[in-house]
Image (cartoon, rainbow, N blue to C red; front, top):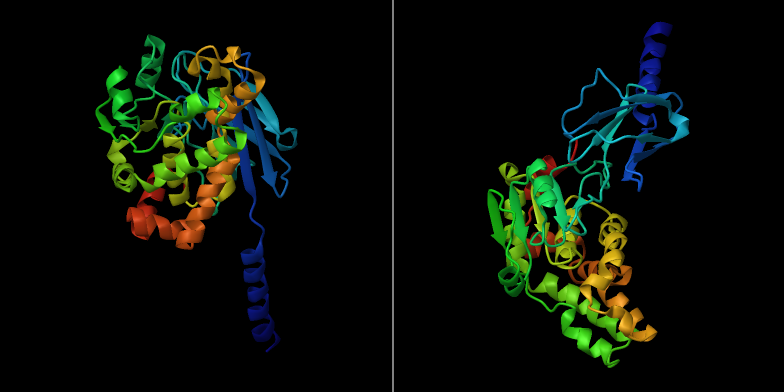
Length: 355
């Protein structure tokens, strides 16, 4: 009798303990240092003890699990690694205590004449699923690619190009690199050059620039629903990958496209904004090349020009907040305006997210 009573209770306790056991999350980031080495950092939550094995590969989808390049105590939290020779990209797989794993690489891809070139892998959505590395890229114009850049694109095996530049830019600066598929989607909307003369003549001040920049980004979203629908049609075909989308600087038109893609993959607002803000990591260095003789202007004008050509958190925050206000949620916007149903979003997640 005692056995009949207590055995089911013990089973219930065991089941409850199993179900309520806290899940361990692992996070990793990678950057290419000025010295040319990779710095890999990791965190676990709750904190783990034990070891982490690091594997490397030229492909994000294939690692030789028999040969780790190093093994470290988890609590150390970082490791420097030399890049693999003669490959465009090095990817790293971190395995914690033979149980938990994640893949990482450097997000910003160094190139000679392609600016703001980024891999969109490694973002973690609300369900803790990570975007795949080596599938989707964003960048500034490819039209100025050097021979070294063309070799880089070839090594990345870019299959599909989506060009968001204006018709004028595409005509003036035609693509040098030709992949299997090139789609021209000239997004409608003003660019910052429209306001540059007013900034230089000091008819537009800092507050005006912020207001107009918000309007520029929102007009790109509002006036190009047809092109963004076509973009998602391309992204929903697995045979089209790897895909790269770009505009002139990779900051505005590409930013709206990237934001929509990340939202469709259930990224939170902070992740979407952080992706947008990363443009500043590279554009600050090339601002003089965007504006001829920027140093000849007085400090107030230089500061306003800098604000005009930099990503600003306020701009994208305004757009995301407006979408939520007008549609109730970003999901509602995606379904109503871009016809991106839950079924389509599930398919996109299958393609672009690790399990």
